[in-house]
Image (tube, rainbow, N blue to C red; front, side, top):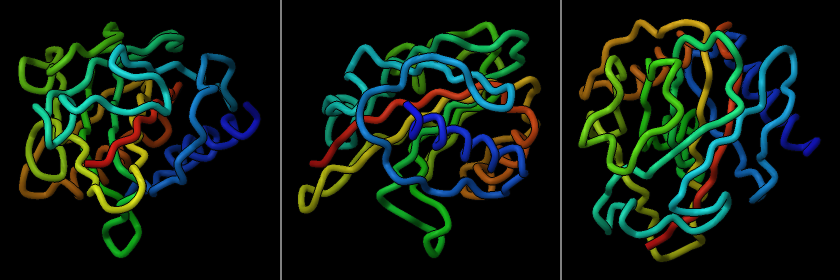
Length: 202
C-alpha cells in the first residue's frame, strides 16, 4: 500500500507540475488498489472492470484480435465537487517518442462529474454527453495487441477526477499532441486518481 501511494503521489505531482507529456510508468504489482486517503488533498479512487480483476488477463473481446469493444469500467471513492473525469488507457511496455511516451489505447476527457461508469463498448455506442475520445490510431478505443512472442503487456487504465473541464478539441491527425494538451490541461486540477491493470498478449 505504501508503494502504491508513492506511485500515485508521483503521478499526481507530475500532473500538478504541468508536464506536457505523460511519462510511461513501471507496471505496478497486481492487486491492492482499493480506495483510501490520497496525498496532498488528492483522493485515492478505485477503478474496476467486471471483465477482469486487477492484474488479471483482459478477455479477448476487448483486444485487437477480438471484437475490440471498449471494456466496462466503473470507479468509486471520487472526491466531492468533481467537475469532470479523464480516462487514460495506455501500454507502458511499448515506449514511443524516443522513450518519452508510450502507446495510447484510449483517452476520454470531459466525462461529466456525475458519471461513475462507462458501459461495455461505450467507445462505439456512445460516451456520456460532452465527453471526447481519441487513441493512437482513431477517435475511438484501441484494443490491446501485444505480440505472442515475449511477455504479456501491462495495459494500464487510469481515471482522474478533476475540478475543471479540459478545453482541448479531439484530432485524429495529432493524437500525441492532443494527449499532451489534455495532460497539460489537467495540471493543478487533479483531485483524485484510480488505476486498473490488465495483462494481454496474442
